[in-house]
Image 1 (cartoon, one colour):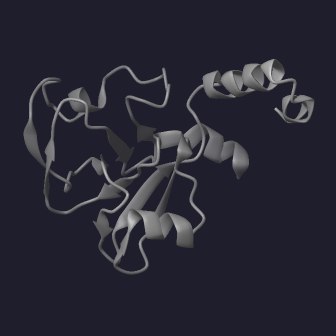
Image 2 (cartoon, rainbow, N blue to C red; image 1 turned 120 degrees about the vertical axis):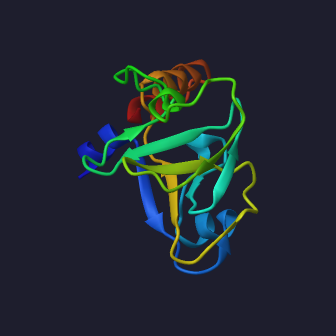
Length: 150
């Protein structure tokens, strides 16, 4: 189970009731530190997508995740290219796609999520770079217990 989650890098939970991202994270003990405190939500409505707004796609057939920020180097196209969008283009994008589930980055932890919607968050980094940084930081601080555990 853990090995599978390491490969997937993300987890998706169903929102049990109307709540904010912050309250959901507290209630479900979700660690949002890998995405700088933000998460991703599904939407059936049109969402504005601008340059720099992060998106995560999940293939409806395979369950594989695609993103442009976690360090996954296996994908050949950017998320925007996979959706047929130009990189610089600001567009209204429908969350209803035949091939992918689309998850939109929320810029605020106070975003209200609808009951029954889906919330996505990153559980493992796509590369070992973050772990290497923590290892070097522990060594610099001579925190040998943390160093050993990493």
